[in-house]
Amino acid sequence: MEEQKSNVRAVERALDILLCFTAGTDLAMTEIADRVGLHKSTVHRMLATLEDKGFITRDRVTDRYRLGMRVWELSAHLSNNDDPAIIWLPEMERLRDMLGETVSLYVRDGKERIRIQAVQSNQAVRRVAPVGVRLPLYVGASSKVLIAFADSQEREAIMADASWPSSIDAGLFREQLEDIRRNGYATSIEEREPGAAAVAAPIFNRSGRLAAALSISGPANRLTREIMKEHAPVIMNSARLMGTMLK
Amino acid sequence: MEEQKSNVRAVERALDILLCFTAGTDLAMTEIADRVGLHKSTVHRMLATLEDKGFITRDRVTDRYRLGMRVWELSAHLSNNDDPAIIWLPEMERLRDMLGETVSLYVRDGKERIRIQAVQSNQAVRRVAPVGVRLPLYVGASSKVLIAFADSQEREAIMADASWPSSIDAGLFREQLEDIRRNGYATSIEEREPGAAAVAAPIFNRSGRLAAALSISGPANRLTREIMKEHAPVIMNSARLMGTMLK
DNA sequence: CCTTTGTGTTTCACACAATGAAACACAATT
DNA sequence: AATTGTGTTTCATTGTGTGAAACACAAAGG
Image (cartoon, rainbow over all chains, first blue to last red; front, side, top):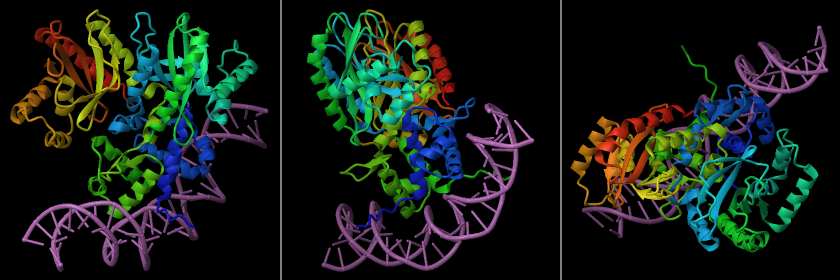
C-alpha cells in the first residue's frame, strides 16, 4: 500500500510555495509559511532561491512577494497544444458563431479581473473587447462568476477587502452569489457599461478548481433577460467542455 | 570576496531544469541532464517531482517532457504590473496611434510563432490580427526577427529542422539574417499573406536574451519599402523601451 | 543471432546539504 | 519601556538528496 515515489522534498516544498501565488494577492513571508506549513527559516531560504532565479520578486515598498518574470518567460513557451488561451480559441469561436456575440475569457487577479482571451462578434453593433485589459472585480457577470466559484477562503478574502465599493450591499450580494452557484451562471445588465449586458459561466480544471470565467457580451437590447436565459446552457456547456481540455 | 547566499541547492537545480524549456522544443531526459550538467538520476528524480506537481508533462507518445498546466495557472496570476502582454499594451497602442497600423507581439514556440498580444489599426482597410494564433516560423518579418536574434545555438536547431520548406535557400536566408542583425529590424512584403507587409524588431530582456518580436503590419500598398524604412526606427525605439519595462 | 548504443529506471551507502530551534534585529504597536 | 509583529542569521544535528553502479528495455547494426 505504500506509494513509493522518489521525489525531492526540497523541490516539492518550493513548488508548493510557488503555487501559493495562485491565490492572486501578494504574500508576506509568514503568510506563505502558514499556508504551506513550513518553518520561517525554511521558507526564507526557499524564497531567496526562487527570487534569485527570478521566479518571484519582492515589492520594494510593501516588501511582499509576487510572481516574477521567469514565470511569464516560461508560460510564453508553453508547448503547442497546452496554452489554454490558445486551445480554447476554437471553442470560443464556435460559441461566437452560434450566438453571434463577443466571447471573452477572464481570470481573477487580486481585486481585478483580466481579459486573457477574446473573439469578437462580427455583428455591426458589437462590444469591442481587447485582450489584456483589467477590469474591476465588483461588477459584471464574469466578476460575479469569479467570486462565486472561488474557494470559500479566497472569496472571503475578496469580500473582506476594504476597497469594496460601499454602494454594494454585502448581504444582498451574498444572496446573488448563492443564486449564481445554484444556477451555474451569472448575468449582468448595464452593470459596468451602459447599454451592455453579459452572461458568464465558470471553467473548472480537472481538480475542480476555478480556472477562468467564460462570458458572452453584447448590447443590452439584443441580450435581453430571456435571450440570456436561453444562451446560458450553451455557454455552460462550452465552459464544461473547455475545462476538460485542460491537462 | 565570498558571496554568502544561502540558497537551496536542490531547488536551484530544479528551477534550472524548468528554465531549459525556454528553448521551445520538447526535451528528453538526457538532453536536460546534458544542458544543466547534472547526473541522470538526479534529473530523473527532479523531473518526477516537477511532473508530480504539474509543472511539466510528458508527451505520451514521444515520452519527452514539456511544460505543464501549472505554469499557465501561475502565469494567469502574474501580478498587476508584471505581465508583459499587459504592461506593453499602452506602448503598443501608442505605436498604433503614431503609425496607424496594426501592432502585434510574437514569441517563438518551437517551429512556430504565436501572437500573444495585438492592437488593431483603426483604419478602414486593416490587417485583422487575433491574439493567440499560431503562424509558421519560416515567413514574415517577425519570424525572421525571432530567428535572427535567437541564441546561435537555438538558431541552428531551428534551421537544421527537416520540416523547413525546401523552397527557401539556406545560404540566401542566412545572408538575410545577417542583414537583419545588422539593421536591427526585419521587413516582409507579401511573404505570408498576399497584399500584406510588415516591419518587425526584437525586444530583449534585461539579460540581453530575445523576449519577443514587435511588429507592425498592414496592406502592402500602404506599407511600401520606403515607408517601412521610415517606420523602422520608431518601432525599434518602442521595442527597446518595452524591453526596459521587463522586471 | 548476439552485440552495441541509446534510452529511462531503480537501488543503496555515504556525505553533506537542508533543516528547524533558537537567537537576533528591527519596526510598529501598545 | 514593553510587546508583538515582522524578517534575518547562526549552527549543531540528521536525514535527505546524491551519484555510481547495476538494471531493464528498445532500436540499430553487425
